[in-house]
Amino acid sequence: MGPVVAGAVVVAHPLIERRDSGLLVRLAGMDDLPVDGAPQLYQVLAEPTEAWLKFSRRSIGSVFLMRTAPEQVRAFNASCPHVSGPITWREDTGDFYCPLHESRFAADGARLAADSPSPRDLDSLDVELRGREVWVRFQNFTPNTAEKKPA
Image 1 (spheres, rainbow, N blue to C red):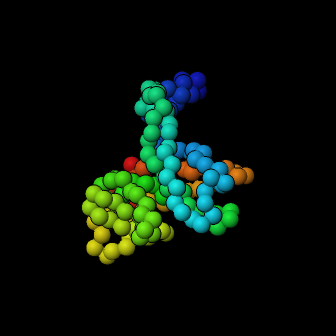
Image 2: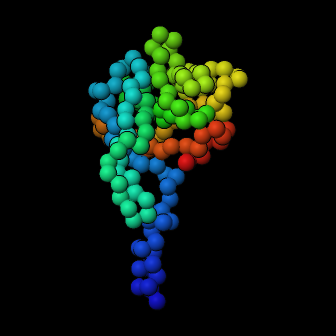
Image 3: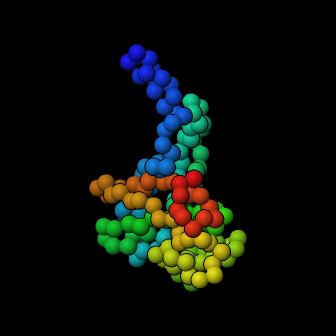
């Protein structure tokens, strides 16, 4: 009976695998990020899988990285929490901006207007420093909900 159960788990694993933990990816080196904290945009490339199918390498999203101290980095998903529109950094006003419905966010990711179309602040991502390499646990989140839930 043991081998049958083990075999079933191996076959079913792609169907029951947790998808809410994100994908750990190396995005930059510390020396790639300006010390002044100016956000830098990075594409996240991956080979997505669906059950047993594996697709070719493609962009699955974007991340803003900001060096906030000599050895500290902050990361935000570059999709607006409202309807997943593209977030840009506006150097002249020092804010993140979504042109779809004019949501604005401070450098720390907080909404800048109480009546913002976005139901929550920018979605922060976990950062892991490995020596001089910057690794980010990338994931997308369900849009247009106040709760930050993995998509």
